[in-house]
Length: 224
Picture 1 (cartoon, rainbow, N blue to C red):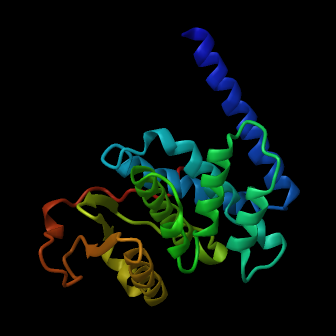
Picture 2 (cartoon, one colour):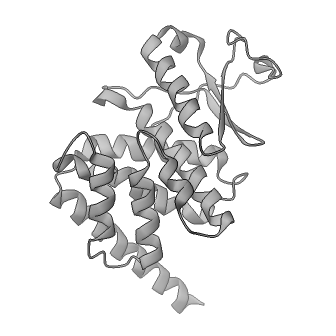
C-alpha cells in the first residue's frame, strides 16, 4: 500500500513539472493563471462532493493553469490552439486519456462549448467533464480582463440539472458582469446544464428559489 501511494505521488510530481514546463514554454501569464486556478478550485470545493468530482480535482487545476496556452499563437482562437498544443505535446506523467480530457476542457473553456457533446466517452465521464467545464468557465469569467481583484459569488449550490449562483446584490449593478453571466447561462444550457442567477436579497425576480433562506458570509473566489 505504501509503495502504491508513493507511486501515485511520484506521478503527481511529474505531472506538476510537466504543466509548469508547458506554461513556461508558451509564456503563460502565471499570476493570471494562478488566479483562475484558485478561483476554479474554490468553486470546486463547494460542489465536489455532490457532483462526485473529487477524483478530478487535479485535472481542473491543470486546465485552469494552462487554459491560455493558445494565446501565444492567436488570441481569437486561443482555446482551439491550446487544445491542439495539449493533444500533440509530449506530457510526461499524463496518460493518453488524461491528456485528452485536459485538451477537451481547454478546447471548450470559451465561446460555444458544444464540441464536448461530440466527445466519445462513457456518459458518466462526459457528465464529469461537463461539470468540470462549468467550473472552469465560471472561473475564467470571474477573472475576465485581468482585473486586479477577482469578482466573487456569495456561493454556488448544486440543484438538479445545474447550479444556483448566489450573486452579491451590489454586483448586480455591474452590467457587464451580469451580461457575461447571462451569456454563460445560454452557453451551458447547450450542454444541458442550468445556471440560475439569484441574489441573496431576492432582487433577481427568479421564482421557485428562496434566496433569503440562507445568507452566508461571502465566499471569496480566490484563496488569499
